[in-house]
Amino acid sequence: MDIHPLLAALTPAARNEPDSGIVKAAMYGFTKPNVIPLWAGEGNLPTPEAFARPAIESLLKGETFYTWQRGIPELRDSLARYHERHFGRPFSHENFFVTSGGMQAIQTVIQMIAGEGDEIVIPTPAWPNYAGSLRIQGSLPVEVPMQFENGRWLLDLDRLFAAATPRTRAIALNSPSNPVGWTASRDELVAVRDFCRKRGLWIFGDEVYSRFYFGEKSEKRAPSFLDICDDEEMLLLANTFSKNWAMTGWRVGWLQAPKVLGPAIERIIQYNSSGTPAFLQRGCVAALEHGEDFVKSQIARARANRDLVVAALRDLPRVRFEIPRGAFYLFFGLDGMSDSTSTVLRIIDEAGVGFAPGATFGPGGEGHLRLCFLRDPDKLVEALDRFGRWLKTAPLD
Image 1: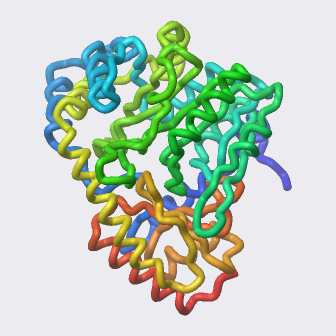
Image 2: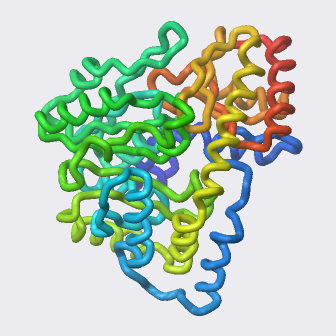
């Protein structure tokens, strides 16, 4: 097939990287009336006014100039205090670096540690942005599929560690996981830590959904690398304001890293974005300092909606899944489905419900669909009713 000459002039990585199936579903669904969208990883509530107001006031006061590349001091101090409250030990503001979204935190990590041909080991199914960001810069995602056995997603640590080669620079672990909701135990985190220490590898952690954890009622967050690692070892943690505080459109996140990396991180931020707008950071300070009740209400909604979705899908034909222990997604298999991307588009057209295709989440994802359940419960009920009716009559490929 002929390639347009302008496309041919791009790098192969930029030209050949596949589209995100999540975005493909959303862009298609946006053109259809009355579709209930469950494809995106966000809740349905707008940012609370208590977080937005300081940003508006800062903007109106003229705080619109270049600012600290590492983040304004007030936000970095607030991040340290937030972590002290939730981990029960001291943290230094010098370990926190504000980024333009959690995605920029991830890209900063990749740009620091993975060069041409270097590898990062990633359990899958996984959010596609890890692998895509690696491939675009010439690095290699080494994807290790989890196994779905006896109704549970299982990570084989021996298989994970065996995937490391002399080119491996890091093991990436997202826990709680998007899309499957798998959550690493403390023992599993210790095993990853010890393997990385022995091999001199970076731990690349994504604990964005740490607060969305459905263990015992007394457990306020998921097990974390911060429980078992030193702040100054080879640990890089990406995080964001998007999920906890309903701020996905703000595009503000942070990277937690050893202090000695500060100049390198600052340079990468300078060359990628030249810093995160100061007025947005004012709203993030308000979220950290005054948003705990809102976060708790978000978690309670997610738990209740998870149970609602489980009850609705449990008795449907051909559906299989594990009840997720964390995050706010249900990743469910459909027996007889071989092309989740085309199936998602069919469901949008024929049922008016928008899911994300499992294939976009890498090896082990095909044959599944993902739905986000941090939505309006009435809309969830309607969406699940539509899907249930469709599933009972629609032939699968």
